Length: 454
Image (cartoon, rainbow, N blue to C red):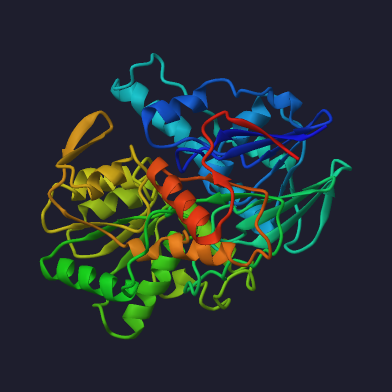
């Protein structure tokens, strides 16, 4: 029987990655992500999965970001009982991200019920912290660069993808067919993460296209950071940085410490106000060798930032009128403590809201970067008078040229290349480049498309 591939997410959008492989009664799901951004996408999280979770035999995760792992608590709660295969770094980060996501779901529902701004009565969490913790029992981490047999019929090998700690491209061999999933590809020459590993052969390839129609700015992120911090501090303001708790927060801490060491910015207090980012930062020291940083450099709390632990301490930051830098999650301002800080700092022209990478359509981050005069937070419109910027060069995703560079390592064209994980214009732009520059057969699948692989 031919292999069947179904696209259950991560197509026509950068969220909700789920790719289902089926043959001879076995089902394997590669990535298990949450949909984020536009409401019509988020509603898919609440709808039944198009395939019964009980019928899925294994899940393979490329990395820990919630758009790739965040649906797992629901999958396990609804009956999935197989292994979740991933790298150790991904397992360690999911142990932080998934329970935190469940906790935030509960808190958001509680807040909505208390203040009465939800259309649902009562508002319910998508899943709970307990659901998330239960899903961690399914994890079975394996090393990079080693073939692992699963279900008696498949071989899986994880190759470094850069991007974030533990992130991998997946080489999956089922019978005589080799399918490669790029996962989220990182940058070449990144200050903190390793370069994406070369992959030489694939019968079929799924490649991400987040930046498939763009090139990253060539500027030095430390030059941009120094300018923003100095100008904002000069007018008595605070720099508020919405940052992904895993990867981006740690890169920012690295660059800020570098600027302080060089005397290029004043010795302002820096606060990492995200319990999840704090725990993720501590994980880096346990995985020296999987990134570029030394064990000493991973001790950000010792020199760069003050870790903010409890809610009251977080609230105190908004009462503190002194210039400072606050790094808080989430990176697209979709939830978490950053929302409370935005309500306080966004209306004041002295402050700067500085994003640090891709902002998916439908998120508050995308709206603010596009120049929105206000955004809705906790049921009310918050005016945006602060300066708004975006450090695009800090993105953890390969840009279009870097994706083509990674593809160029393959010794022969795949039979078919599927362009995934991108907004429609980005995916189609990458398709065009691959067809015209590499001469490969490729296509851009849509949600729930099915294809049979020879």
